[in-house]
Image 1 (spheres, rainbow, N blue to C red):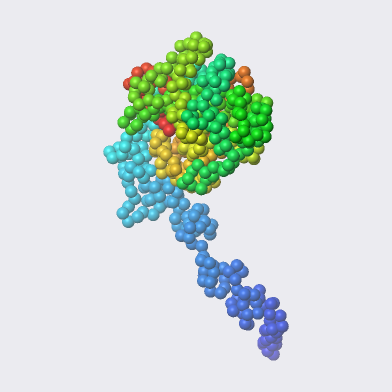
Image 2 (spheres, one colour):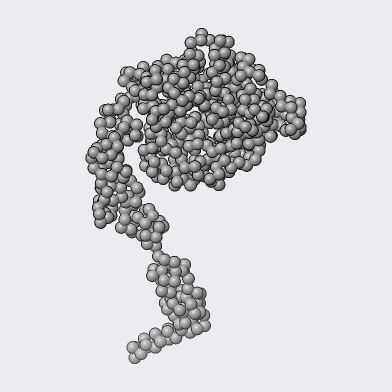
Length: 591
């Protein structure tokens, strides 16, 4: 009797459940069972359609909501970081360790990503390869030295046999020669004594960076509009068919419209409000407010340009691979722009950068001797100014103008943009300027899309360190933005920080930013009757590498002085300097 009662109770319960499902089918759609008329558990039939995001393993899925009719289930070879992987298709549930796909020699690996904890191909891991990024075989450093590879050097940015630190100690210069202190037997910071670099005795203010007010402001050559250092005179030499006004308007007009200097890429350079800041105010200062460009009788006595410095850049002299002289470097005029309405200095500089023509050791030495002799004058007197103007007369021609560079934030303040650097070339026939790409500077789009810069550095690290790299044309920027004083190039995944540093320092925005701790301008705009101040990159300062903390001492004017002294000493010394540490670090320097 008791068994019959239990059986009747169970039967009644089943009838009630089935009746419930018949009366209210939805009540059976979340009970985790395959009920009447459902296609699969809790879906289909009277229930909602089965889906791939219902958190139920149903409808032929391989796993819950994946596989079968749903998207493929995560795997360790799907190219996606998922299923608790610690990297893409590595770590976590995957057999492959993430160190085995990082492109670096990891613990236990026989070569990069091969052997030890990593897979080994049937032919074994490569060994003794002079391009595999691993110190192996008989090598004395990474891919250098030993029986088969190129010799290791004191300029390759790596710790090699006998060195006590990277590129110093042992067969190289003492390590104290590369810190930020005057120590050891040095007679100056990182120079003299046992250091490779001697300390200079050159009068830098007279022979290299000439910014004394008796030259740049009080002399007739700079003060009068027909003076040899005046912007009008320099612009009047740019074309036999175009007067100084036409050349000036050609320059200023480049900011009026969108530019596309890099024809091999889609990068464009936005217009900036040059009319509002310079042109319209200059017309008003001339008493011609509102006139057209054609009708404007441009008065160069009101030209809003203030000479900041005349600069000797013999350190940029070039030779071919055989050591033959190609040129003697550059001579430069640095101007700061002024607000035409009140004459106050703007944060806006332009530099006219002229080639010093030379094709022999004798011509190179002649240029060096002429600049060096300037320090023999007792003061910046008229005789000094005459000697200087003789030098500038011989290089300040249109044919010698390598480029004009600009650096400003004043236009950016009106247009909501950052510091911008541009480069322009001139057509000597028409006297017209055209914006061109900035050499050795990637476009700003590669800051966020940095994989290409990372790969370029990693694939060319050795050449970058010794100064032989060249960015592909389609990566070069039209304009260069320096968004903050601390900006530098630092793509994730770079394996050689010295190569990263060298590439970043050779860019305009890296050198004018965080790589040298420069506040945008190397030669500062100046007030009237005040000499232009210089950045510590030029005068001497210690900068901590923003990535690995390496201290680096920059004293560019001191380096330039040493090079000038080498060049004036003898032709043999001039040739030898090309293998020295200074030029090894400075090769491909444009700023």
